[in-house]
Image (cartoon, rainbow, N blue to C red):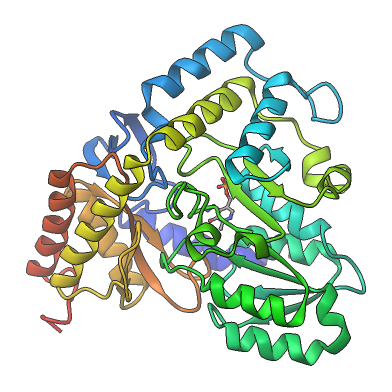
Length: 400
Ligand code: PMP
């Protein structure tokens, strides 16, 4: 039967509903600010967004969106290849290319379609893609569509990548290597310096998904490749407008002029409506703000270090170093769900992450901080975790 394969998900949902828990797709009833909202009728601190620089509620971005909607209407009602290319889309492409210091950019309607579209199109049958084993779903989805040979290397392991490139022999020079900047679930940064060195030794092309690292890492916020000093080794940077820029949409930038031809070969670009003008306008404004205010990035990192240190001091498993994504490792699925609900009851909204959304077999309470969080809010989040440990809802290495 067509529906048999969904049975285990249906019983999982039924079990959660019986216990009155709704961790997936919990509905936000009100947004009060970039860091506060109401969920299940309760005012909560939002500690599970990707609103790294607080741009979603910046009054300047809101005003830009309002003005654009008045000037252009609410949607483009068409693809970029048909009626949906407005001067606004072209301006954003020029600005995002300038931000990265390159000449070519494509703007997509979502980050997912940017990453998936590039991964699906760059390599094809008879060619080879090497990707980090913990890659995001959009990367997996793209490479599956590509028809290329797919080789996974161990997560954040340049030696394993080198071994696999060596095995390719002559074909290594044409291979596409794919890595992310910051990995979304554990918050760990890719060793791009070492990955770039492998590419330099064996040849090939490098695509980096900077979805979680744009605006977050690097001297001017271009991401992990800039922070590692290897931008010249990166052939394609892809990313999203839905995180540090607070809107929605995605991009690919490149110094290769071929990107202009590639544009017309990407299904995820051709066969979908372009971003609405209000989205483009708020994205442009956010890009301008994060460029003009690097102190936002400093505040983000202060908050990241604050939360990481606080949760680590409680004896929680939070990974090896501070990052704007602080993932608390949990024992199993029931403990993770119970912890998530208890945090919500304590007024803190975080992300519940269980396989297959998490890498390997991790069960996680994923916290993400924003430059918009106050220091007092970070203290409240830490105190909520302390309360959970005290009540025996979660265990720390001090209580285990
Ligand atoms: N790439 C990575 C690495 C991501 O984490 C995400 C979103 N979580 C995306 C792409 C897709 O971006 P968007 O949600 O803006 O479509």
